[in-house]
Length: 209
Image (tube, rainbow, N blue to C red):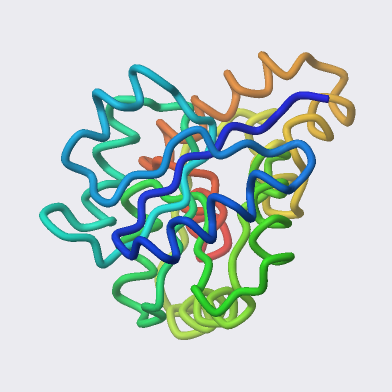
């Protein structure tokens, strides 16, 4: 079984330690790094590169939203879950636009946190239920926005709509009889054409249109 390597960026020392302990007792997950801020995140990730990051928004020095951009600019394959007390629309969408692939509230249960890590690893875009509702409501409030076309190929369109349906990379590969590497190539092209940085933002844009 492949172990999912996770980094935590959280300024509250007690919470940081609790999250680290929670992840390390979960089978198939290992917390390899726990940082109080983003000041040395690039150099630290070059020493120990995680596949997933749990990141607070309200961090000192550099905010979590700026941190998502920083991580994605330097480590494109690292996925970020925002882990925060903030549930206002502006911060949710700023985080998604910056490249976050998931958004969890700190009141999430331990099992929800573990489930979110596995979900993201398997190609999902985990969000707390109340956050998902806000995202859906925002689409309903913008139904008058003219629809756009993005010059996607037929296969890219098929894969994008399967992402909306919740397919993981593995399931996409099986459905379309292609390798996971080919799936990643298609998704990279989709991101470029939609001008997005994450699966969550791609799904949001296609649902809106």
